[in-house]
Image 1: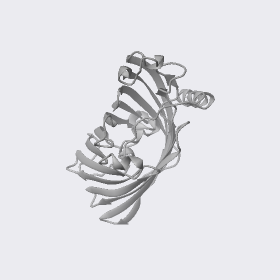
Image 2: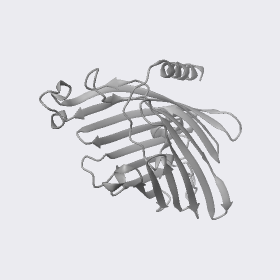
Image 3: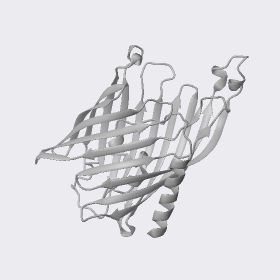
Image 4: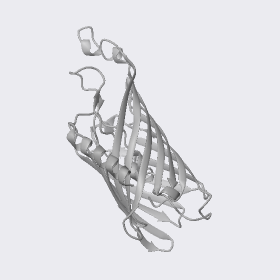
Length: 303
């Protein structure tokens, strides 16, 4: 355990010693249901293993609008007080596209009887491509040729403190900075910082309330935050609203089809200047949960 903590602390030191610059990664309105995507410390914090597919279609109706497809697996390993995860993410914006593959590992420390701390590491790579010829002019050498399959490795760190009723997490899922074109171009990967928190309020036996938030900081980009107010009815149906600073309001619903399958949908209404050219943002989630050690019918999807 001491060796794990030493590796984690070394990664944190690298994180805060490196300089920042960047291009933003996609964010899901369903982020609270796949926290390991932005915080590796959350890997395996749930009692159930899961595989989740989330598809996001942003600013529908605009040419070249972002679309993101992801497949995220999360597995608790209670015998060793740890968890593991795997994320594949495809993101396309205009002429640019990226394929991202990352693995997560988290060690879960027992702080008190009901409180745990997950210390996580994330590692993987991104494959970046851009059809820059469509954007270039003959006098612009920056965009004189395409970028085909440029591979950039990266790693991330995260801490995730949680109990049965609340969580707080701080993370940077990608620590290293990369440029894709040249020293004067704006394309590249930026380091992101995330702060997440959530709390569960049991109103009665049929209804609970879960407020949550996510704050994000990226250099050269406005500080942003999401505030969510979600309700769980009869341990079966989620419904709620989201506010994203300077961007959108959203509406969320998710249904537990049975003890293993969940289906979710969100709609984001953009209130920025893009609203005149966009028909909003749609997000579809499909999640499969499984375990041989947990009784059927038990709820494990508060976070």
